[in-house]
Length: 328
Picture 1 (cartoon, rainbow, N blue to C red):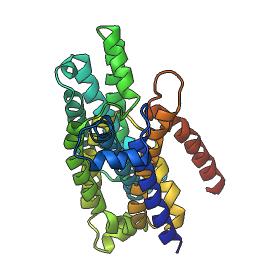
Picture 2 (cartoon, rainbow, N blue to C red):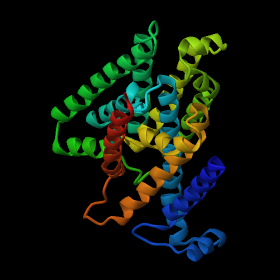
Picture 3 (cartoon, helix red, strand yellow):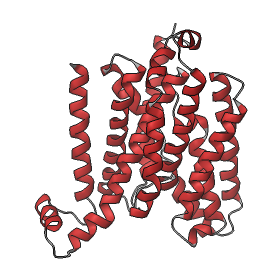
Picture 4 (cartoon, one colour):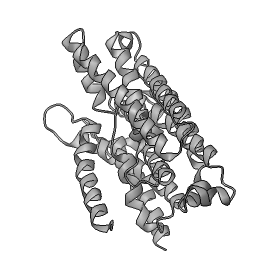
């Protein structure tokens, strides 16, 4: 019963937040105006805003939040670590480094899609490197390899900022690293959506393995689970999905950490049953946060990644304190 209620709440929340994302902004559009603009054959400013500006931004918010929530739930179940999230494997930082390289060398000025494309390549390269480093080890080796690759990519980002050829390049790099869905177009959706969906499918293939891994790797293998295959699906799914999401939206943290913890008490703490609700929860978190960035008026629009970090950091602290109280 709790699980059914959770599904209803998450579905209604996602619909409401997506509708708000279409209507809220510098130009507010009422539901009646939106309906009239979408049904009328005559072109209008409201239709242009809805279709060309806010619709791709809303769809990306749902996709980015969903894949972050899903990957976080999978990694927490696979690694049996409640603090695991997509950044743990270095995918997010690798994608950030790829986009920063495109900005640093001026390639992003040639075409708006250069940054996302380089970011996608960076995420895939870091994930592949982490997999190669940990191919003969277990879960701990994968975590350590991800941390090492993430540190190297982070050092590369810092070096690019340090050696930025001009203040404009440094500003562009810093702005991108803050994460945002502003000024995204259907081209960004076309680039990211297929990879996010493909990554999500790979991650969902780990559902049965995650439930068995809750008993331990040895017990899971005795039940016929191919742990190595599950690890590969999780890693490549995260690389594709989160790499594509980071490539188009920038660095957005804490969603993969927070979303699974929000829904886990309502699904009996079963790793496999956490995946779908965590996906919806992640989509709601990012979409609501994106709408909130448009409502807060502090001069320039606050960046999406900054707002989520402001909320996610206290949650992370609370989670650590909770674990300290419950751990013997």
